[in-house]
Amino acid sequence: MKVTVSRKAHFNAAHRLYRKDWSFEKNDAIFGKCNNPNFHGHNYELIVSITGEIDQETGYVIDMKILKEIIKAEVEDAFDHKNLNVEVPEFKDLNPTAENIAVVIYNKMKSKLASHLELEITLFETPRNFVTYSGK
Image (tube, rainbow, N blue to C red; front, side, top):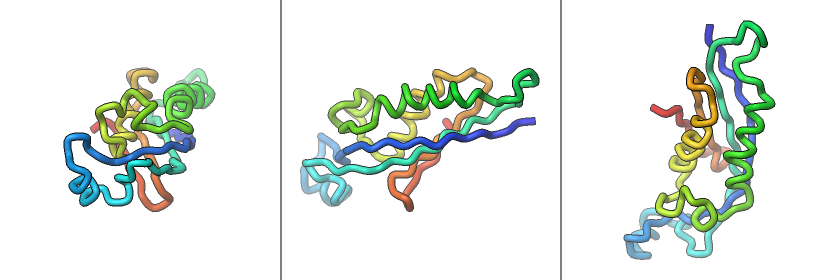
């Protein structure tokens, strides 16, 4: 029997949505306010969900202390109070849209989890706008 456990986290970060190979006018037409050359910020909310079989010895799908440590190391320490475009290497050449941020978080976390565990990332950029990614 498979069970899904989830943990919430959050981080604050600034970004600018734009493509270096487009003119300012084209970036402005596509990304609007998010193309501000001085950047803008969000209070991101993150839900990390792990699905797997319940371990018969521990009763856990994953020890939540371990999940908390992975989220802290791979997401909070890496992204919190950072300018994603400037300070986070994964976004040097990748537009830090909510979609791309969710995929980057998934990839960073997946490599730290046991291979039999399924991972799903839900990232809220605003209370109304969010992205879900599960590696598919």
